[in-house]
Image 1 (tube, rainbow, N blue to C red):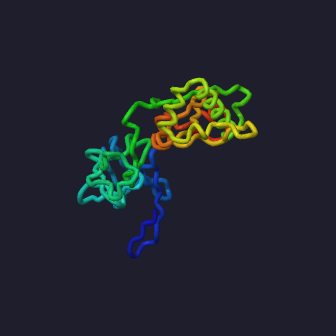
Image 2: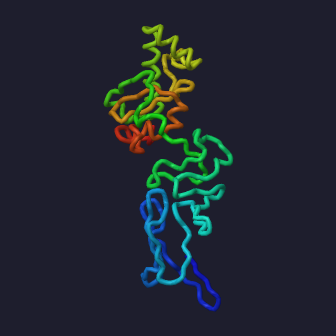
Image 3: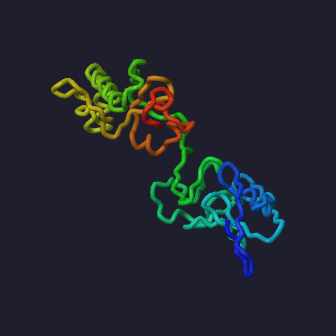
Length: 241
């Protein structure tokens, strides 16, 4: 941080932040603390101390303190650390949840400067609908996504032959899925997920689950509670699948 004053040379000051990037200390070139603070859960200060006049207004990442109001400026709107919410709705309202005033669920793990995060609060982590589960052979774990999807599609095709009710249900919910999983004239199966669906690599080794594509994309943390996908855990290749 540059600090210029009339008649004085510019000075470089250094930020020391906590795990989520909020400044806790500021030091000069000699390592002396010139400013320090502590935070409550949603961004309010527990204390603030200066050893000499320096105005440090940065708070959670993407936020700038307005000392007159006590609110944190987030470019498009203001955040109130007293209540852990924005004081105005999301100005563009795209891909957000139904609560347009909400902040991210955990200030240590998430930031939401644009207010677009729609969260995982609608259901528990790891809770999602699986239309079909396919178990890969251990020798197939390291194959590409395309090869995994091809094997999954083959399993769906074979199940549909023996389960007319499943076939009707899937075709009703996802038109085109029956045609998609049929083998080509050469006996090969598509290397892409069926329309509206995707093959999710579970945490359990070798398990592919056929799930709704939009749900998988929208609720990332529900499918990947620890932030890491099954593909990364047991098969290498693409992460968070």
